[in-house]
Image 1 (cartoon, rainbow, N blue to C red):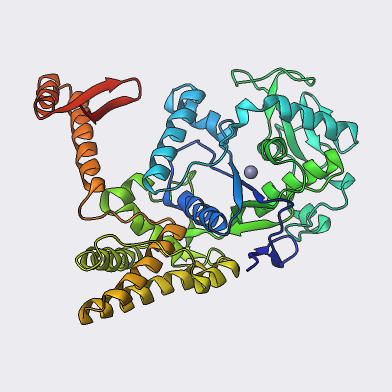
Image 2: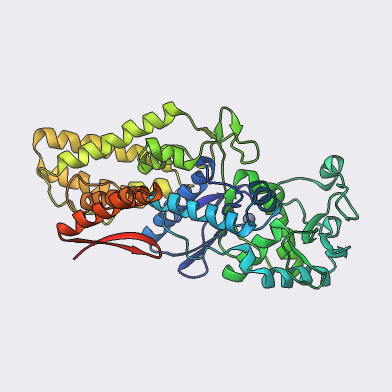
Length: 453
Ligand SMILES: [Zn+2]
């Protein structure tokens, strides 16, 4: 069955047709000016599930998920906190990885940082200038929007419509209010790189054009990101790349709708948000995945406690069933195919329908359990395990290796907490007690580890 996704550019469902067995995807990752909030995680969860599904379909997936580690807000925020901008970016990137790991989100194939690709960015800017679609002005470089007739094709915005709202800020040196910066001259005390236009740094939009081209080439299969990025970010990404190279950019565009809070988009700048770390204080990470995948990626949704509590109850129905099923089917198999699930996910990645099928399986399984029908139970469990794997859920079994690992992790974090509180005597006592029962606890550069002797 062919996978179809709704393409923002052609405004219709479009089959995914990679040129070989690899699906090439670029997903706009976070700007790491602040700590990750649940609004960020929706896109990461959807992309992770999509990647798992495509792999189940037999594709290789090359997923590039960038980190924007330099931009106005990163600089502003680091000044406000009185720390180096690199430190701020590293700290928030680190937290993003901790959170996505906890959510069972696989790390992308490549996670490029904008600051590691300044050379590619400068080359792309130079190409745009050579083609006559950008100009230098007092150390800034601007994209000349009027020189590029296809501008607006993604968002459907027209030049005359944009014109009315546009204005030139006093700090900008552009010729036309519609133009946008691809390179910004460094202001005093700002970080900079050397370029043909003097000391400066990249504009935000050019980073993604350059990094996607570098890792995926032209006409890659899918460019994804939050709905709020359609304009201007993605519109500009297309204009820059296509104007510079004359080649086609992404073949299809996938936009994940917003996760709102009290009717409004979560926002780092206004503080209207729920931090990822706060969610995990209360809920198992699988609950947030359930909450996310119960809604179609193209539907706006609200983050609410009631919604999360419902997702928690739903998740518990699954784990309770799996635990109960183990009494009759102690070594559950993994189904190799599940055509009905394939069908709904191939049709614009309909995860709410897939989640509905998961609960049908739990119901069938519970009935089989009640009637003692071992074959039916085994069949439902095998399908359920496949569905959970494709959607990226990670049920923890009540027994076996998983639980021991949880306990070991707990001991490690307990020792870390003791050390943080400068209770070194107790931290060492804990280590000695653990070693006395035949385990080794050691402090490494990456932190404390525990292992069997
Ligand atoms: Zn981007």
